[in-house]
Image (cartoon, rainbow, N blue to C red; front, side, top):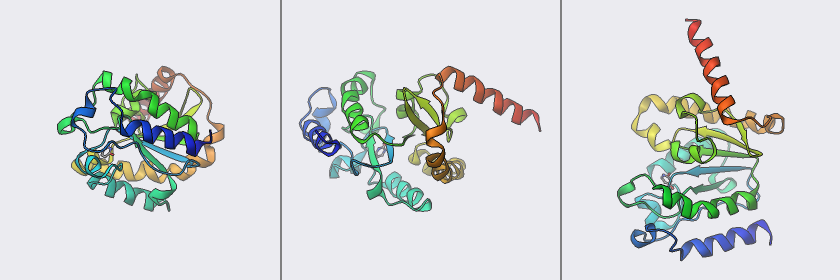
Length: 211
Ligand code: URA
């Protein structure tokens, strides 16, 4: 099967999936969208109200900000793949539960394998922990880490940046580094997340001690 065919098969399966409780309350499942040859893949947490209505990821206010962030680095949403760790809306936008994350995990894995993106950008803590379970987003945001062969950059969720104006500039600045990470992508060695965390922590402590 081609990457495109795998994505189509995932879409079809997600749309009728009953692997977890979320199917009871969903209106339309949201598998994700974008080209099968996308170089960048963005992974959010789960569909919200508007996504559940339309069956498309990031189409509410967080999505409008994501579109702005993409435009700031010269990209359109049609050029990247956008999805979530869970494909159905958690009721009242609560965090997805562990069994829901597990139930949906295989869909995301198939999408990653089909697209084979150069960079995976996780949006928010919940999608970050899928790749980097032992780190803090406040320590790791904007840093590229190779995990199981994949280059992952954790970022704050655009919705968090909308609610906390202090994060807005951080997210804009982290996005501005993406083109550079794309160029460096091939040269970043595999590292254990705990090593990365320790190194990053040390680096920031050293930076702080300069003041
Ligand atoms: N927040 C997410 O994490 N994903 C969406 O698709 C929309 C909002």
